[in-house]
Image 1 (cartoon, one colour):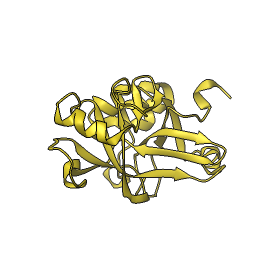
Image 2: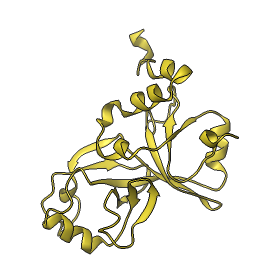
Image 3: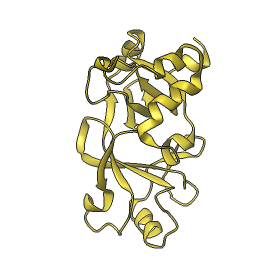
Length: 186
């Protein structure tokens, strides 16, 4: 296995173009955990078109949208950010990307405008795999593995993210990126 094909925390999973599961159609999933007891990640490109402050009681006014993190525990809120040096308890996922941290401190940082929409992304639910499940899905070519870049989470147009990452991978992946979302468009 090459480094590019090794499933690990901090990688991005791109749904293969014909994935039928509506939860993951054209999904870009940031893998935040990959251990013997399973894997966990968040879908980066499925906005719920709802401000996060509408979902959390006693949350400061905040322009940031909530995203659909995946079909598991959709009654939970999670967040990734790029301010790990300001937020105690954060876990580094990849260069410039952290997960979680002290929630009360986060609210303070938002209130005082030290954290804004360019620093954080919130998710409702998460994507999860049981032990061995993700490796099996990789064998069936359900996912394409790519390196993570912090810009994917904080500075990209999420509607084009799946296509852009495939194009950056080059070669045959660039061709896959051009496959229409719906085959009846051909």
